[in-house]
Every structure is written in structure tokens, then in C-alpha cells.
Length: 117
Image (cartoon, rainbow, N blue to C red):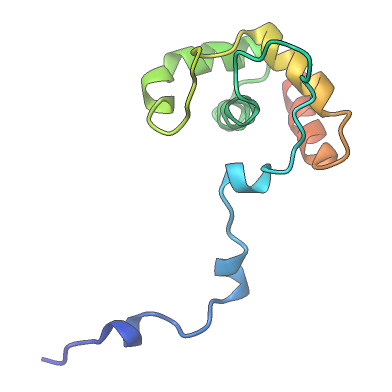
């Protein structure tokens, strides 16, 4: 039986499809947190990721996103920091109103907001 070498299993050059795969956090890493001067109990990336996952699962309001987050809290804590638990529905709404005014990723975040509102 032929034994494959590690070199034979790994492509020599990464394809554009592999190179362009980013995590949600990597994709939105440059989004400016507009909450300067405010007490920030929740990390912006946690808020963005929870919102995306909740919308994929059918949430269509800030209240439903909060409820989804609370129902999935143990699982979310396996990959998000969540130092103060799940943000309130008011927090989700306020953050997305402010983030949508920033210059980068505005269209993507606005599309997400439109799905919720």
C-alpha cells in the first residue's frame, strides 16, 4: 500500500478561494467602535457576531436577538468573551445605529440592520 507524504496532501499554492476565507471577526475587524466616551460593557465584535448568528437562525428584531443570545449563552461563551453576558435588545439597537454611521462595512452592517428592523 502506498503511503502518501504530507507534501502530496498539501497544495503547494493556496487557491484564491482558500486565501479569501475569513472568520466573521476577521471580516469586521476594521469596524470602528463608535461608543467612545461611553461605558462599554459589551465588546463590539461580540455584538456583531451574536447578531449575525441570531439573524441566520431567524431572529428579526433586537428583542429576538437578545432572546436567542440568552438561550445560546453556554455555547456562545465557548468562542466569545461575553464579559457581561448577552447585551440587552436596547444595546444591540443603539450600537448598530452608531456603527452604521461609520465609513467601513456600512453596507454590510446596514443590510444586517435592515433584516432586523
